[in-house]
Amino acid sequence: MTVGNAVLANADLSREYFGDASKRVTHRALCISMALANFGSFLLGGMSMCHGASGLAARYRCGARTAASNLMIGTAFIFLAILFGGHSLSILCLLPMSVLGILLIFAGTELSLTILDVRGQKTLFISLIILGITLVSNLAGGFVVGIALAYLLRSSRISV
Image 1: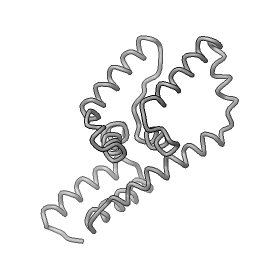
Image 2: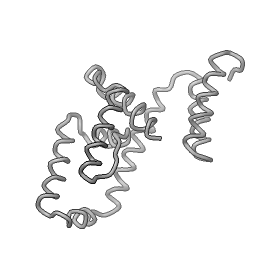
Image 3: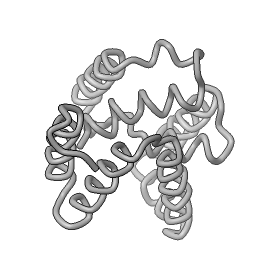
Image 4: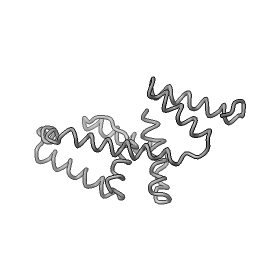
């Protein structure tokens, strides 16, 4: 799931949102930055993390168009940690869960709008099959069936 969400989808979404300005956001660069961040986090006793296309979509939807948004939230978290230490989590828990729900709705809506870029009957068919399998079973099953179906449709052995 991380490869799909944090690498493939993130690079594609970055390219869609920022065009030529995102040329440095490659699959390789995303993998390397996650590896370095997770190694550094491990050394500091933190949790593993990934880039995540949903975070990019939510921030973009809420108006963040530059790296300044990441710097602002990072600075806010550092100040929380310095000023309140172990009580920082208690402060963050004061935020209503509905705020998180709204952010998830924004992210989900923004990500679902990417289906509008799908062109062609075959591509739409594959996307809907992947969606159906993912909802019924899991993402890995949808991914494997989607890849196999894409190769079958490309080889012209079957048609839609």
